[in-house]
Image (tube, rainbow, N blue to C red; front, side, top):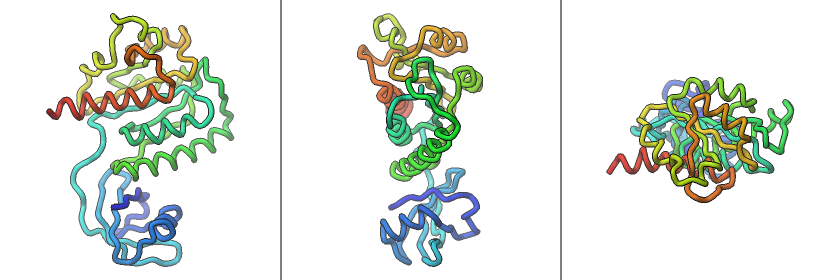
Length: 252
């Protein structure tokens, strides 16, 4: 059943109103009609089965039939801080990272980031990334859409991380030594309900100065296996590992 995330102001009693891109998708793409059923998600996470009762004036009105129980969210709140990568790699990280359960994304300007964002470019990027996250949340039946933060400098990132219980960053130097802690070792410390901050370097990795600042701020440097991963792979590997350790292993 197709799922849509509907803004708070479009919930009116027992009815939900879909407009703009959602209207286009319902009517033009899916070709739904009155009587068809869809799932509508409230921003606070509640999902409801709704029946389309009216299609008019660039809006779709649906009646709430049943509130759904359960959640597809990770048992922990995971923020991915991503060093600005080249090209459209951030699109992939946000799309697949959303499918894997990330709660929020923070792009940041790393020492070795090749690209630079000005305020105009950042505004356009955030609009695009928000749309990607919404569509990926609908596709993967998430209960919430991850938040996308404006790009930060490393100093702002470190300040933002102070509210998190578990902080990790994959570090290329750690992959070279078998005695270095693995991601699995660190995730043994994770508990449901915690906030986890994952900091991923850009294509060139972290500078030694950045790594030292992260460690001083309480981040755990970890290896992600013996291979050196691309920046867009590292975030997805980490999220998949978190899901495995906290959702699969502990459910056996």
